Length: 321
Image 1: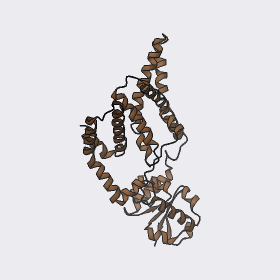
Image 2: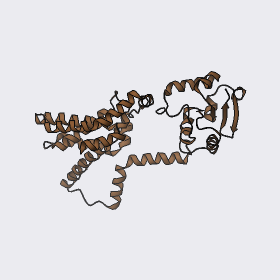
Image 3: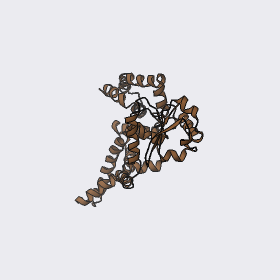
């Protein structure tokens, strides 16, 4: 059953391959060292799960090496884990209590195999999310909170026992229970609070200006489905989501040869090269305030650019080449 479930999981979450097989492998190694003998049953189960998981793993590897778009997408999938202080803030009390629970298991003289698994999971996960050889480290943090939650439970019961032995534990009031839940959920409140501040400040990542929306609607109504739109990559991210047209430069992870294209666009914004537009098959320029700050030439003086739409926020030029 574990092999079947792993095969299903890897269909849409291939990053878990590293977490699952590294954790299981490390657990088998530690278990064998503790018991001073290799557990063949564990080893056989490990390879059975690996066998069932092979089809989706092989498929993803094949697409990465054989399909250029997938190759580019994978090479741009750089998600580095934030520095340790930010990680501690992100997990909040969970990681401190979880680490304390881990220390309790390490000190225990009555460790069970399930305890060894939790210990293995923690150390393997922490190694993977900061391993310099892995470009998508942050992807591997998914699921780490489960291990931390279990370890936190160990620590909470130990703390409860400590208070009981000293006769200083009493029944918690409703307010104290609420404050305790707030304490464990502190990082969530920080995230929600930052989002609320961004909403209140009308952050452009949350709100689209009316003029930009009008420009995107014009593109949808007045251009062919194959028209290629050029803008800065920040604006391109929005266009990609709303106009249903090919965008030359957008999100780094889904733009083939992103860095090369970004450099070409920056060069065009400085020089206004007609050859660039022709070679890259650009049909329209979508110019907002962000693009105007980067463009170093007068767009309206170029005879190959025809202004076809304008409002307070956006000017759209058609490329006539």
